[in-house]
Amino acid sequence: MNRGFGPALVRSFSDARELAQAAAAYVARQAERALAERDGFRIALAGGSTPKALYAALAEPGILARVAWSRWQIWFSDERVVPAEDAASNYRMAYEALLGRVPIPKGAIHRVQTELGAERAAELYELELGADPCDLVLLGIGDDGHTASLFPGSPALLEDRRRVVAAPSPVAPLERVTFTFRALNEARAVLFLISGATKAERVAEVLSELAADRPLLPASRVRPRGSLCFYLDAAAAARLPAGTPPEEEP
Ligand code: 6PG
Image (cartoon, rainbow, N blue to C red; front, side):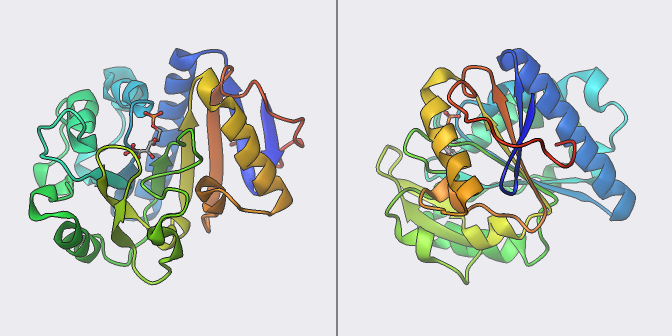
């Protein structure tokens, strides 16, 4: 099922496995497009638990055998300020599910140096990221409508100059480093990956806000200059209004 909600193109899939496979194919298409036009594929990975299945699917030989891993540059759209080996680390989750299983040069994996503390790590990450936009940013949505580590009421929501900042979280780990809306909205493509019934109400709210151009929740303020896609499983799509037929294939 493909539907449009304002700038967002939405596809839903029967279950989490089909969602992960479709999302991996989407990432492969974005990588192939970037590598045909430029010298590398800059992707920012999402944290949390939902992307684990996608990262595992990307590590499967069949999907990306044809993609030059050596030309990927890996970023993180946010990170918890914990040691890299901590179970809460987004870097650790991505390394175990994908980065440690494929031949990406270690120098191409840009970890947030959380051992330096939130403010210093954010400063250095922003310098390392530079001004080139990401070809693809992967994101999730929290139950409160946050995305990356941009939480409702956070001072980071007001940042319009910096691309990476330290930000507070209402849930542990309490200190985060996150892309700002500037970095997210400079992206050539953003893919929200959302799974599970607990997200259904928020997803419907965010897409309704996008359709009405009334961005109240942080996730509704992600309006990349490129494409904006939502890939959902049936449970997360269960509360969606009708939407409109999309103009293009997401
Ligand atoms: C994080 C993520 C965060 C996540 C949502 C959804 O560091 O926690 O960046 O924005 O995407 O909270 O998390 P789940 O996928 O675990 O539901």
